[in-house]
Image (tube, rainbow, N blue to C red; front, side, top):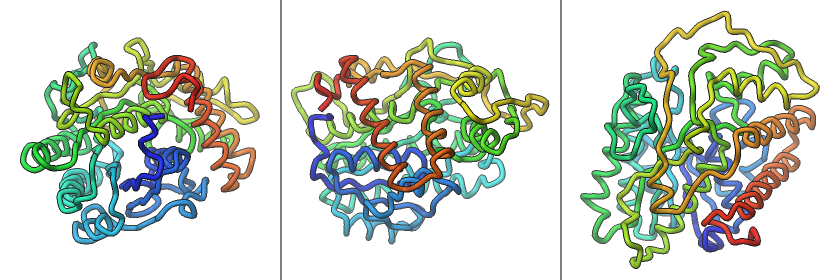
Length: 374
């Protein structure tokens, strides 16, 4: 996988206790990487990070990305080869309640990571994860491309647009000539087992149905490019590996670019489809929805990405169908709630899903994996 780049490499992950960060760390561990995580806290209870007992398998550092001195010292000590920046305030609705904290974490936090990388000579590649919401959303029916306008109405979306500007400023000013290779990545709505964040449809279903109550749906007709968490992570890992290898024979540059990672263009289902599909896999628990309460604060109802650039530059495309994405997600929560959430059990189940996903990718001839799935 990924040209075997990660075996034995030192990888620094900010936001490692979050949903995507913990899945990324588990995948890196499975490939033999030495992982250092830097995160302010465990963001939810329960959490995917704690369900796996991941703290016992990596170098787990608690710190705030807004604390530049501590972050720089932690990175200098870890001497990473590759850095992934995921730490963020990641919720749209919370950004209305905490706008200053959202901008501080997402904009200044990104600047601090770039500055720490600038001062850490061991770093060879840097992948900065922002969001599909970094685009100014005009409710177009076509997918947004990497050169479309950045922006956002809510503080979260605006902060992600700002983070993109900061990242590309550092590339042009400091990294383009002699610094590490770097890129920003933007993904659509990510789902999967172990997400318990507030105001997200799958965690809302998991919490409600595990407690035998209907789930409250705020905006059933809003559409999103739903994808399993492993889909964009495969893109991030592939891009990080290619940046590390620095193959100068490629016909186009990889460093200093932005990339979208999302499902096929026809995978753009409304929230109600996700809930109904998830309910069909949710055996042994109540699975109902309540759509009596509408949306209170502005959230965009239509948002999709064009991923042609990732296909052209990276030969990357999504692996799973919508139904497979839902099945992987439901099975993880089923295992957690029926099995008591034991650490080693959930770590092994998570690694098992990663293995199943890579096998599917190999069978479907994805560029980032060999034909035998190894």
